[in-house]
Amino acid sequence: MSEDGRRGGPVIAVDGPAAAGKGTLARRLAAALDLPHLDTGLLYRAVGRRVLDAGGDPADPAVAAREAEALAPQDLGRADLRAPEVDRAASLVAAVPAVRRALLAFQRRFAEPRGAVLDGRDIGTVVFPDADLKLFVSASDEERARRRWLELKGRGVEVPFETVLADLRARDARDASRDVAPLRPAADAIVLDTTDLDADAAFARALAIVRDRLGRA
Ligand code: CDP
Image 1 (cartoon, protein in one colour):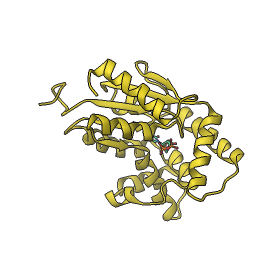
Image 2 (tube, rainbow, N blue to C red; image 1 turned 180 degrees about the vertical axis):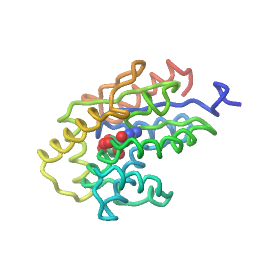
Image 3 (cartoon, rainbow, N blue to C red; image 1 turned 90 degrees about the vertical axis):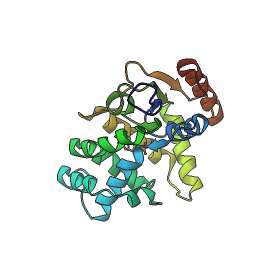
């Protein structure tokens, strides 16, 4: 039986701006708590990728909505969803209300059987406003750009640091200023600033919060 009468386990929302370390943190929390993990950014990335592959404009609402409705499971397994051009395409399709509507039911269903840890931009505000715990993970612009630059370099993608910083700021501005589900901390989110924390320290801090709030882990 579900812990709250509706779901098979707790829902933990991990939101925040680009390259804040949400994905790594959410994955580690899910493993520690034995919960499924969903990186919701991948859904928007896969829609953006489909639009680019079709030669379309990700800012065109009709094209973006059509590709969101046609999204198939195999689209999420593609190896090229983290390319810089997909960062931009994802944040453009993510501003289209019909795209967000098309992806909402999938995200909610994902957590039904056993609960879940989901990371994204609007998990605590729109997808699960009643989440059992909401974390908003952030870090300074420069530190986030440094992390993304290192990640790209590790994958053999050489981009000037200044370009990474400018792209990240442009994407955050677009995500925070859109009309639907803008990036912002939920009123009841706990903000975790990871500027001075490495991945292990951020995980330890988050786990302590989970223990305190949910009495588990
Ligand atoms: O990994 P990173 O933080 O750079 O980005 P991501 O989480 O993979 O998300 C890519 C883009 O998808 C974001 O810039 C948002 O525009 C969009 N997104 C969203 O609108 N809502 C979500 N729940 C997740 C991602």
